[in-house]
Length: 200
Length: 380
Image (cartoon, rainbow over all chains, first blue to last red; front, side, top):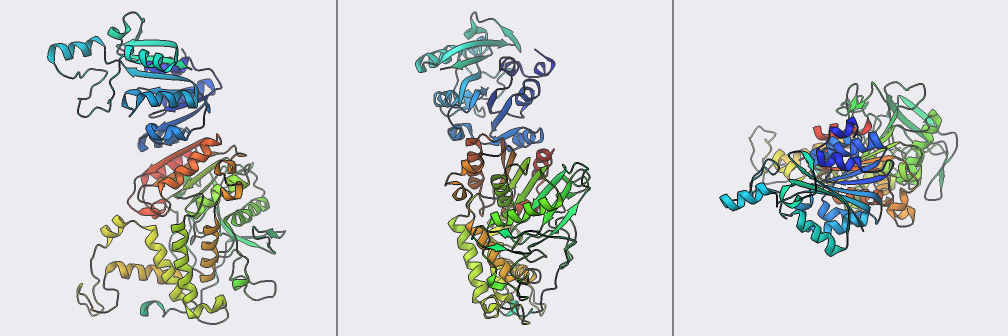
């Protein structure tokens, strides 16, 4: 991992590390463009972004990145089939109107996809619900139930099942807790969030 | 329209700081060609030795080359002084900025008020031109100035149409294309508003089939009605409500805000529109208004490229940035998205942002700090 990728959030860093140089990448929900900038600068990647928030798009444009303001639920349909080597969806799946359809779109516009999401079966979440009977507010998911954008709570096991239902291959997976990568053993209990590399 | 038909003084002949006469005839989309075309332009900032720091700014329907310097007729500041100048988003300390009066206009470039080879004004003998013809004129100017590739072409409204047309038709001439509050085609509603304006001009007896240059009256009533109708489309309902509401004008005799029970400009918004209309007639030629609105109505970039907008951009390696405004109902966000979709389909690098601003279509000319940041960022 080089200096630029270590500046990134851990899930983005692992994605950046596993993207081949000189490829075409669509970053869906690219935020301020941090991942795109690293991919462009350290891997000569032709990176494009889709982001719903105008202020974030503005920041991306100011960094010289090509980012379109749009809604992933609606606008992914506008991209031609196979127009990217990779489609990236980081920490956005659980906010989609239909995560299953979004997964289809990812693997339509990209030959491969990276998806990262928070694991709602993490033991802290389970404990909060079991002991206190309340929807969990954790360090990784700090927003109360009524204002969270996370409308589709997903676990590592749920996600694996969706992949198998759809015939999508998980080529690699990574799990994180406390900002550090952990092994895959007991990931559905231990991981705060997960990253999957997918293909058809 | 009592208040509008009084001013009949002839328009002063503008003097351009720079002008370039094309060495060859200019072929037009209509199949005709124009001889001896002159393009009047202004430039700001130093040209680099490699001539690689040039930004071409394209102006809108009633704009002109006085981008960042006072207008010679009205004395008002340049139309984009807030955007263009030393240290501004389009930074004249770094870039050589060129803005040319479009073909068909009336501020020194060849248009219907210019003299035809027979020594008389063209008037309605001027050929109908298109946005692409205007761009051909701009490219001929760049050729004359020895500028091959632009750092960027930038434009709002009709200027954005020219920027897109330049990218589509001369794909190697601009490295960056910034198109603001614009469209790739005129909609039925856009054409309809323009037709109202043209009919207002042509219904004015002083228009005289366009042959009014020799006399001392001009179709100022018609032209100002055209401008008033168009001006409404440049604003937003919320903007008009905030600025004027239903407030009444003070009467000339000093009575504060009372209805006249007549047809004077009772409401402040009426007075404002009349002022906008009559001010416009002092700097603009009615026939130019007919020709340029016609060019905009004919604009359909997809039609020029086999009906598919994606094809229009297949040859370009430029980076694109499109900006729309949420209160712009003349060229709404959907029109910019349509262009973005086509650029995505052709694989061109494109950014797009819809900015929030209350001023309607005119937002691109007004105080919208987010636009400044996008423009500056994109041109870096």
